[in-house]
Length: 259
Image (cartoon, rainbow, N blue to C red; front, side):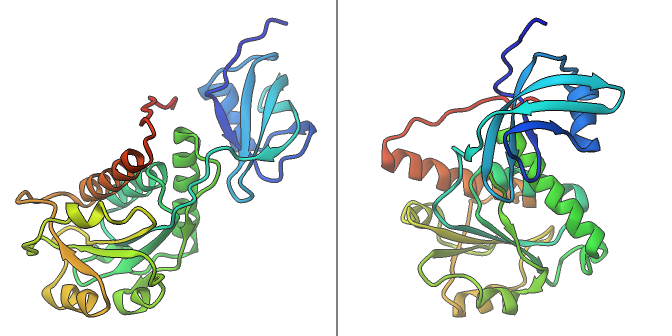
């Protein structure tokens, strides 16, 4: 059987260990119908919960049954080590899902969904199924960007509840459209860890901003334009990510992920 090297192809798989492994239904569907792999093709499997990974080779494909041979399991090579908390106001389903994926790719370690005054009413009370869906989105984000684990997804809570959870050691920033001070200079000081509060559509209420400020968060602005929630997540985390890369003298690598 011919062999193709597809090292960029990554598939999440729980409890990986060396030897033959029949993939679960979702992974099998992805390999056969999305990637259209064949016996002999190589890929990488990773366990996002245990932060481990292994090289694998497709052994056989029969309908929706896919068997792979896994090599030795090792610690995942790409796992963020600098704490980065994202306290994200609940917003429209599509925007929230987009923000989760991009936050995963940009190294966030903890995500706290926030119930704020202007949060979308449909997401005020996420049930267990929605939490499961959010975790799947985080796994998808990790698969696409090459990350070996996923952020810790905290329970939905109020702003007051969330403020006490954030470690005091982090540079704490609240993005607020009414802030007069640019947030950029503070992001550049957060090389050892950051916590960001980003509101939903409509922004953060005055009282909420002052509550965050009283808890040690710096109120900062991303500029004069009004940004969507997911755009603000990208802008703030992207700026933080790049400032850390520059301070460490590491080239930023941009890779177009395989869907």
